[in-house]
Amino acid sequence: MKKTEQLYEGKAKKVFNTEDPNLLIVSYKDDATAFNGQKKGTINQKGIINNQMSNFLMQIIEKDGVPTHFVEEINERETVVKRVEIIPLEVIVRNISAGSFAKRYGVDEGIVFEQPTVEFSYKNDDLGDPLMSPLHAIALKLLTQDEMDKITDYALRVNKILKEFWVQRGITLVDFKIEFGKTVDGTVILADEISPDTCRLWDTETGEKLDKDRFRRDLGGVEDAYFEVMRRLRENDK
Ligand code: TMP
Figure (cartoon, rainbow, N blue to C red):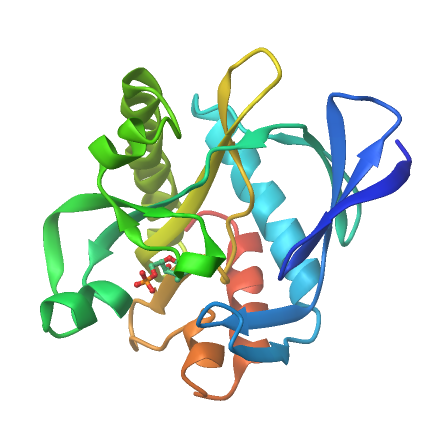
C-alpha cells in the first residue's frame, strides 16, 4: 500500500490517501501539544511508540469483539487504517478521578470509582473541546441515539479489556480518550489511537505517572515513561 496525497495534518499525526479509496495511511509524529495546542514540544520516538502500542491494543480489542480501523502496520511510524468519517466526539472513560474531572468537581486525584464513568467532549478546537451531553450531541445530529448507545457500550468494553490488560503489567488504567468513526457503509468502528498520549497510566506499586501528564505538567522523564509503558506492553502475561 502506497501513500498518495496528504489528506490532513493534526497535532500528533498525518493522514494520507492511498490508491484504495477505502484505506488511509496514518503517520505518527513525535510532536506533542497540550492545552489545545498552547504548549508545544517533542517527545523523542513518541511516534514509534504510539503507532506500535495503538496497533497492538487495537488488535486485542478487535479480537474481543469491538471493531477497529486497524488494517496493517507498514513501518514503525505508519499504519494502514480503514477510512472513516470521525464522529466529532471525544469519548472519555474514567476509573479514577484525575485531570479535568478532579478540577471541575474540586476533588482530589486518585478517588477510585465503584463503576466507570463515560463522558463526551465536542471535538472543536475553536471552542476548546467543550463537555457535551449525549442529548446535545444527538440534537446537533453528530450521531443518532442508536450510535450513541453503541459507542457507549463499546467504550465500556474497551475499558474492561484495557484495564485487565494493564493490571497484568503492573499498570493502573486511570482514564482514557477514544474516538469512533463511520465507514463508508455506516458501520461504527474504533478509530484514532490508544497510547500514553490518550490514556492516564499509573504504576500500580509506586503511583508514578507513565503517560503524557509528565509532559503536560513538566514532570520530566517523559521519554522514559513512554519507553517503560512500551516495555511493559511487551511483557508476557504474568
Ligand atoms: P482530562 O482529565 O484532561 O479530561 O483527560 C481525560 C483523558 O483524556 C486523559 O486520559 C487524557 C485524554 N485526553 C486526550 O487524549 N486528549 C485531550 O485533548 C485531552 C484534554 C485529554
